[in-house]
Length: 87
View 1 (cartoon, rainbow, N blue to C red):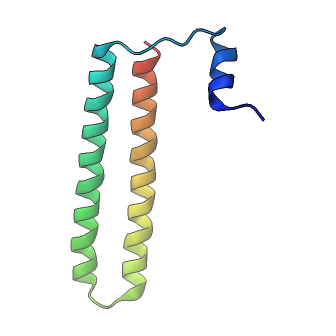
View 2 (cartoon, rainbow, N blue to C red; view 1 turned 180 degrees about the vertical axis):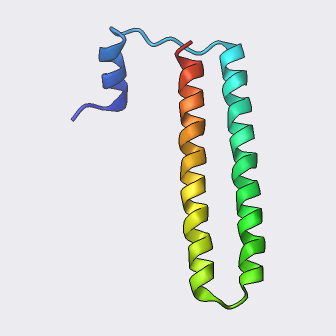
View 3 (cartoon, helix red, strand yellow; view 1 turned 45 degrees about the vertical axis):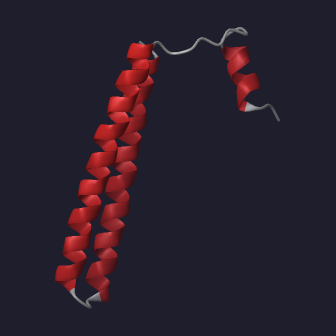
């Protein structure tokens, strides 16, 4: 099985180019934006769980929805970062 580096080397013909400082900055900004969005979702879910009290069914539903939203946000983040890398 080939390592990730070997696969990249094959795809790029042995050339690995670094990202420009502007691309690194944009990727960093995207990371910060999505980390804050995830934090907002977690805070909102915590508040909803407190309101749900001891209703375990409702709390489980909130946790499932939170996990789904976080997964979606992470996917969007990676998609945006990939588009910056490929520009």
